[in-house]
Every structure is written in C-alpha cells, then in structure tokens.
Image (cartoon, rainbow, N blue to C red; front, side):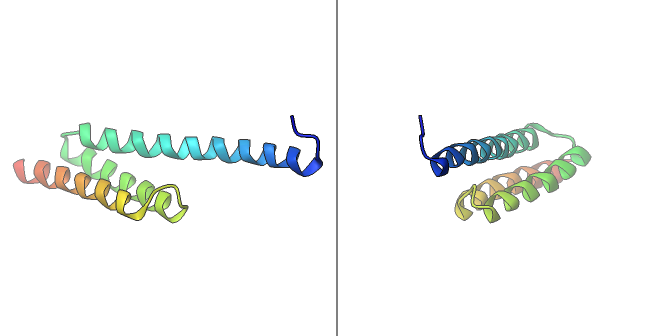
Length: 87
C-alpha cells in the first residue's frame, strides 16, 4: 500500500484512467462486431458511421494505433460495399 500522498493520488487517478480505457476498448470492439454482423443496408450504414467515429476518436485519444484503426475501417468498408452492391 502507498504511504505518500502523491502515490495515493497516483493510485486513484490510474484507477479512473483504467475504467475509461476499458470502457473505450469495449465500445470499439462492440461497435465493430455489430457492424460486421449486420446485413441490412439502412442499419449497416448507420452503424458504419458510428463505428468510423468511434475508431477515429480512439485513434486521436491514443487508445488505438493509427494502422490498427485503418485496418478495422478497411474491413468495415469492405463489408459495407459488399452488402450495398449485393442488394
């Protein structure tokens, strides 16, 4: 256990950051999975926009590497194009 005031504060702030980071990671994974699982055109377009937004925010905040976000966006775009061209 920490004894110094600054160490105690560090523990508190790292707990808060851990919670936010976990929530963000979970949101990214969930929105990508939902988007890839959808085959309805209108719903897919809405989820696609949300997924791109979440990925860009994650990249700008430093949660994702830019190439990881680009790879995920590419997969989502591929899925969107496949669904929209098929119907």
